[in-house]
Each structure stands twice: as structure tokens, then as C-alpha cells.
Picture 1: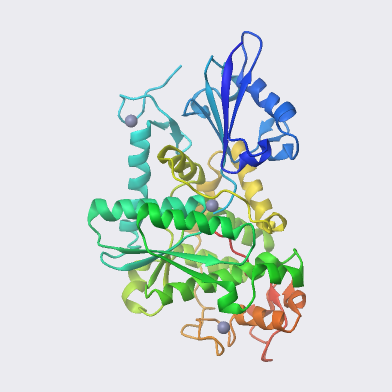
Picture 2: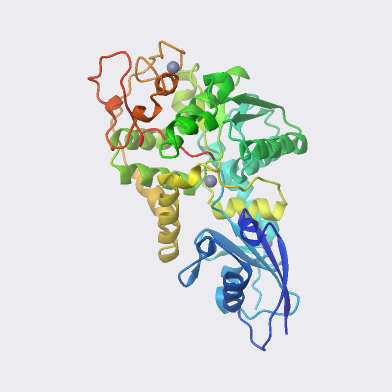
Length: 96
Length: 350
Ligand SMILES: [Zn+2]
Ligand SMILES: [Zn+2]
Ligand SMILES: [Zn+2]
């Protein structure tokens, strides 16, 4: 049952009711990041889901970090989450 | 499975840059980012030692990172730049008030002087008032024209002759794409020529004209956001409440989707841009607006035109939704041409 800390920034916190940090628990052995994203989309975000996920993918322009490491270096959605992981989502699309 | 930094080989990598085999640790990424900006400034002679520089500051990520990096380079290389933050207050309640607070935070954090100029003092119209007259369809056109001129006026007021804005590689590709998609050849040519301009030549030839420079032009949006994140810079990240209706947003999304399929999309667009050469025949130099004295290709500049239309309660009529700019045709003789092409004017904040 890995517990993780989800962080939202760059304007994405507006999707989580202004919460920049959200703790979450997941049951099961091999929980991949894709499942976490799915959970955020279906359970955490109440409206404007398309601002977070489009189709199968996370919205282009959102950066994801796993313990401060670019998820592109960690296998993206196939990354298996570990106890205490900090997953950060930052939008690059807002403002100038 | 952690990877070591491809530059120092000592620390674990934090970020993938340049879309390919460059993965850097935090320290090497800072160095890479700052060096890229510095090389842009040096190689393209964007900024001269000792000069006063206005930094267009919106409180957003781009201008916050720009102010931070310029200050850092100034201290690192003893450029003796006189850096100023220049902020434009569009008069949008609940949006600009908050972002101005972020700019004030920048002022205090980086110890830089701040000069603020508002649409209401320049044009006697706030964006809230503009929107209440014309609605939310073409408001970004007004805002873009007003902002461009307001930044010029502000730069003049603080007696700087160069204006640095936070536009990054993504922004530039987006603008080029947008103008291409709209079929607005006048604006397209202008943006191509602006991007490809060589400042080395223009510095001494025309010292009165304000130079607009983009020191972040070679770094990507992702790198800017990562830089701000790892440096823990505070910036304002709320979309302008009037922006979601702008066509630019769609171009941006489109570009980001292209990038997912083809990671080099943006650098490819920028490469194509650098290969375009256009005859600079259309530019009439040295002409000034007879109303406000701004440099303008017409007798009356676009900002004055739009303002007049608002004063007459005809703001809606002033913007024509088709691609061709009536203003770009030389044939309009009447004192106030009635339309301004929407496509020719909208610009983004950065
Ligand atoms: Zn931007
Ligand atoms: Zn390194
Ligand atoms: Zn004028």
C-alpha cells in the first residue's frame, strides 16, 4: 500500500480546489504512475478534466517529476511507484 | 533506475533537455540554462554593457525567470546593466491585481526598481471597460495593440533604449505558426523579419528606436518552468480571465500536441524560420503617428485607431475578423480607417 505525495503547480492547483499538496494511498503491489494519473482524473479532479488528461495522455504542456526527476527519465506512466514518492505536476501553459 | 548526469557524471540526472541524450543534474542544468541565455545575449549583441534595460515584467514564469537570470548574469560578468522592471497594468480586476503583486515581489526579491504604467492612464480605458463594450471576442486584439505600445512608452519613460521580454523558443514558434495559419502575410513577414533581425547592425544606425530583445529565445518553455521550479522562484500562474477565447490558445495546444508526436517540432519551426529571407521593402521607416508620436507604418497608429473607436462606442466595428488587414493595404486615405485586422495585432504576454 504505497503512500505518495502529489504536488500540483503552475496553475494546476486550480483543478484540485487550490490544494498544492495531496497525500494519496494506493492498494496493490505494482502500482504504476499511469494508475495514479487515472485516479487523479477520476477521483481527485471534479471538473475540467481535459485540463489534466486528454484521451489516453496527460495534457501536453504538463511537466511531471518523480522525486524531482523528470518523468521522461523514469519511464513515464510505466514507472512503479514506491512508498513515500513525491509526484509533481506542473503546467507550462499558463501566463507569460 | 537512476541515471547519472550526462555532463558531470557525478550526480543523478534530474531533467532531460534538448529532447535527446542530454540529461542533466540540477547544477549542470542551471549552468546549461544560464549559459544558453548568456550566449544568446553575447552572440547576438542583444545587450550592451552599462546600458539601462527595461524588463517587461508580467509576474508570469517567463518574465520572472528573465529578471532573475539577467540579474545573475549582471553580477557574474560585471556588465553594469541598469535593470528595471516595467509592468503594464491592463486594468483586469482579479487578474492583474494579483499578478502585479507578484511583480512587486520580484522587485523586492531581486532588488530592482519597478515602473508601472496602466492602460487607464495611457488610453483612458481599462480592459474591463473595453470588454464591457466589445465583449470577449476580439478583446485580445485590443489588449495586444495596447500592450505593445504601453511597453514602448514605459521604456521611454524610464529612459531605457532596450526592452527585454520573456519570449521563449515555444512562444516564437507559436507566433510564427499563428500568423501562418491565419494567412496574415503582413504580420507574418513582420514577425519573420523581427525574429531574424540582426541587432549588430541596428545598434548604431538608429539609436532613437527602442530595441526589443528576447534573451530567452533559445530556451524552451519546459526548461523555463523547470528552472523556476528548481530555483523555487515565485511566479503568477493564472490564465488571463479573458484569454481562453483567443485563437492563440489553440495554436499553443496544437504545437504541444505536435511535440508529443514529433519532439523536435519547435526547433524545426525555428530552423525553418531562420531560413526564410524576406525583402524588407514594405517597411516605411521613420514615420510617426500624428496623434501620439509613436513609430507607426501609418499616419495614425493602431493603438490610437482602436482607442478612437472605443471612444465612439464603435469598438466592435474596429476589428474585422477576416485575415487581410485593411491597414496593410496602402489605399486607405480616410483619416480613420474603420477596421484593424484582428490577426495582425494580437500578441501574447510573455
Ligand atoms: Zn510563455
Ligand atoms: Zn551534472
Ligand atoms: Zn498613435
